[in-house]
Amino acid sequence: MKNARRPKTSSLRLITPATRRARAPVKNIAAAEQSSFIATARHTNSSKDTMTSKTHLVLQGKGGVGKSLIASVLAQWLTSKGRTPLCIDTDPVNRTFSGYAALKVQAVDILQDDEINPRRFDDLIEHVDAATSDVIVDNGASSFVPLSHYLLSNDVPALLAERQHQLVIHTVVTGGQALQDTLHGFTQLAAQFPASVDLVVWLNPYWGPIVHEGKEFEQLKSYTAHRDRVTAIVRIPTLKPETFGTDLINMLRARLTFEEALAALDRTIMERQRLKRIRDDLFGLLSASTL
Image 1: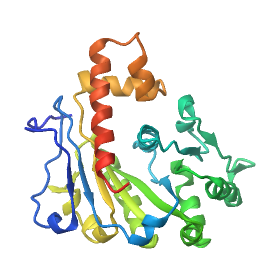
Image 2 (image 1 turned 135 degrees about the horizontal axis):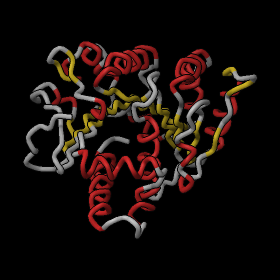
Image 3 (image 1 turned 90 degrees about the horizontal axis):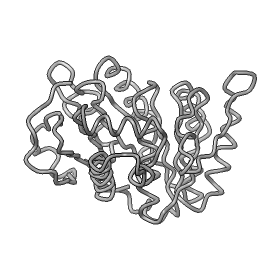
């Protein structure tokens, strides 16, 4: 991956709708050993503040774009804030999220005779409704359409709101060959889900810059047509492959949380230091967001 100039600071910025239009286009953040994140947020509906819990659904129709990374980071951040969530994995093919033993992820089986049975999603809603804490659901690419259709056709967002559960959908847009597929997944969610549902977009440049015909995400029609539906944009930086990038990948492959990796004495001091910086930057961003 090509590296851009190192940013001068690592400060986090929360950009409101009033400043969004005046803001210059953000260059793709690359690689430096300095991590930098940007959150773009709109004001939330005051009625949402009365909800007793939030249900975070990670949805994207393209596989291998970082859905489980997002789910695990959200779970760890909430836990660090004293809000330990109920974690659920509905991926019928690759249950990556379930591999995090420390997060005590529960698997909900949606297969019947090797086919997705939409009625099995009823079990998911029962888990969500019974939860007294926030809920994080990592859903697989193969069940993206069935789960989305189930939620909409059964008017689940309104049902959960009535029962004091705010629905938050997280989706991923990535660069490279998956750019168009992930943009399509984002536009489907933005167009079909009601405004009562918060929509968070994570930009993951792991597979390449999120740029099409010279335009960055916030300049693309996919975004401009639905900007009012986006609650927040989370930009994940391109980490230097030889150091930060390798350390993070090794941690993810081992299905370790940041806390577990930082306590592992078989990792070098500098490896743990870099992981700590990644964790602190990610957690700092989420703390500054509306989540």
